Length: 159
Image (cartoon, rainbow, N blue to C red):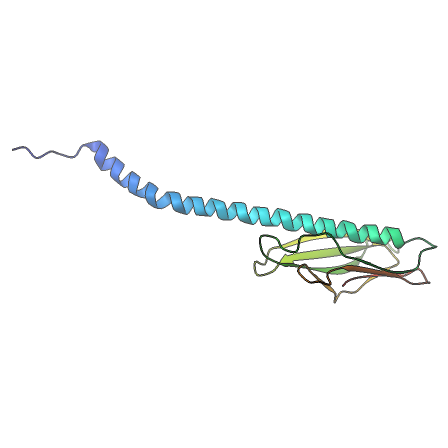
């Protein structure tokens, strides 16, 4: 009675199949994680850009000689990105040119994930920013507050 000998195909294919069974789920999971992270970053950057654009529009709307008072605007932004709330903080920096403009740098962070994006907004030299203010996306009082004083100074803050 002859005992069959394994052919070379079986010797090569068995480890390859076992490797595919192990490697395919790991590779798929890795690719999906990259895709989800990328999607979160894009959504977070869109929120940061939109928030920066709103702040700049409010500034330009109030930065007229005949405008004074206080404006509160609740942005139409999503409260969550991928089921995570986000926060925004701003830092006002002087431009490299003297007395021409100031740059508001917004840092938007996805809570519990830690992803952070930045956007910069150019504002005039008459602006002041409350650096202790924080925009919390899922807060009922999430807003942008602008107040123009009679001397022309415009104070911006998150509510």
